[in-house]
Every structure is written in structure tokens, then in C-alpha cells.
Length: 306
Image 1 (cartoon, rainbow, N blue to C red):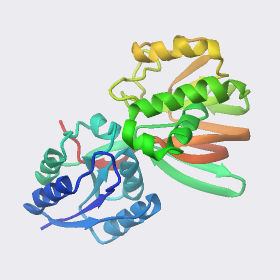
Image 2 (image 1 turned 90 degrees about the vertical axis):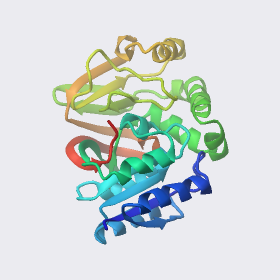
Image 3 (image 1 turned 90 degrees about the horizontal axis):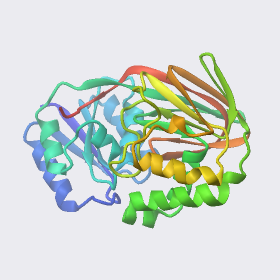
């Protein structure tokens, strides 16, 4: 029997002991299944990396988007497939990949042993001083405004787990109205013939990019193939209502004054002075003074729904 490792986060907002038992029982019907309980994000990646080295066919992330992100870091470039059991608040990755919302049904999908789908990721190489780190984003990454929203939301984990999308919306309004309008353009962005100085870059490479439930955020008319970057020069308070209602109304953000859309790019570079916050898949990556985002095609194998 093939070996499957389930890496679970019991602190995820929708996680229950009963659902974990159901998942393990379902997978045990067809696979040799092992449970792992990492105590931190770093440990989740290390546990997944060990599972890959030990020959696991599938490494399953059971939790929210954060758990999926951290497990995926160990699977990029490997033969092991990423399985997803959604147990978080918004479960953006699960929705993107058509994973059943109920844990038992998601486990049945994995148990049927479907052929994994090869998907691209965005490889982020980030610098802070002499330190360089690498990360892969599954659905979104960014610098500036959205990364600051993520940082503020993560600073209150209780409200994040309890209120989910409402907490992100509250954090976004707090950052938008209180702190970010005072941030002046300080980041130089470059990408395949484009150059701009601004405060924010949002990078999109899936059809849906959202922290707010099922509301999709549209950059422009075209699909992001392979990536699109939306550059904001400076956030002005008078623009915030337009941005908010455009997002709610599923209208293109590149039509708003201050935004510039760079479509169909494969590589983005940036230099920041002072440092700028970064995020990947809604996970804060701290402050950086430079780096790049590069499209990595077929870099991860995912067990996706139809």
C-alpha cells in the first residue's frame, strides 16, 4: 500500500477531532496512513520534507491556507503530491482546486488515488540585508498594502480564527484609513519592459485571488497568464471607497486612478528603501529590502477536484 502522511493543524478554526478520525479512517481504506502534529509553521514544512524523503506518495495538509502553504514548501519540485483537507476559515486554496468542503469527502477524493495535476507556483526570492530566503506561493503573493493587512490580521489570531473574512476586512480598513495613506512611494518595481515606483505590488496567477470569502478580486479583463502584477503608486483615502466597491462588484481594479496593470509577465523584481512587507498565500513573510517573483511552471503536483 502507498504511504500517505497527514499533517494536521488542530488549531485551525474548523478542525475537530471527529473530522480528523474520519479522514484517517477513510484514507486507511486504501493507503498506509500516518498522522503528524507539527507544533509550528516551520515544523510543518520540516515534517512534510521528511515525509517526501521517506517516500510518501501524498502529503496531506489538514487545516487552513497557512497549513497548505507550509506543507507545499516541501513538495515543490518533488514527486510527492499535495493533498488538501480544508479545515480553516476561508480555505481559498481548496476552493481554487475544487476540493470538497467537507473533510471526509476531501479524504475520499484523495483515497480514490486520482492522477495528480501539475500546477505552477510563484517562486519568491526575498532579501533583507545579507539574508536571502525562498518561498513558493500557491495562489497569491504581494508586497506593501496587502502584506501589511496580513501582518495586522495575524497580530490578533483569536479574531482571525473566530471571524475569518470579517476580521480581514476590518484589518484592511484599519490599514487603509489609518496607516498606509502616509506611506510614500519607496519601492522600485521592474518587469519585462515595465518600470514604476510605488508602495504596493499585488501578483496574481490564478483566476481567484481573495481573502474575503467567495468574492473574487479582478485585476483586469484578461486572465493572469502566467502572472499579472497590479502596481499601486500611493494609497489615498479618497480612493478607498472606490477600491472597496470595485472589489465587491467584481470590477477591474486597473481602471482606478493610481493603479497600473502589468499583464502576462513571468518575472518581477523590486528594490525597497525603506523595507516593504511581503506575503505569500496570506502568510506574512516579514520586511524585505529587495527580491523577485518568478513563474515556476509545473512545479508542484496537487490532488485536485474536477
